[in-house]
Image (cartoon, rainbow, N blue to C red; front, top):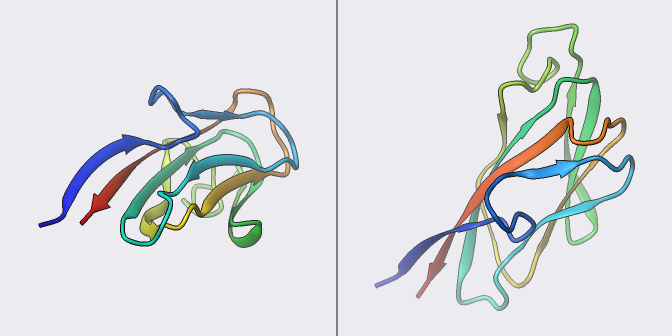
Length: 121
């Protein structure tokens, strides 16, 4: 029977969120479990009050982005405040790096929150 343990994202040592302040620099949110027998189910939310394009990538390859504009109310193009889900329980393993980068940032104004359900055989 598999065991499931809830953990912080590896880039968030205390569960208080990861502040993204650097512009155009990828920040590692999480490094998935090593090997292929266990998996990490990753859940991530992002919160910002400024216009941005927020890019996510795994293992150095840009995979998806979220664009927002504080002048609209759309969850996908409006201010991402309150937090909006950007990784809905996708699974990773084999040491996959999950990273985020923003195109415009004011230090500490963009926060990424999340957790991992680690599933081991």
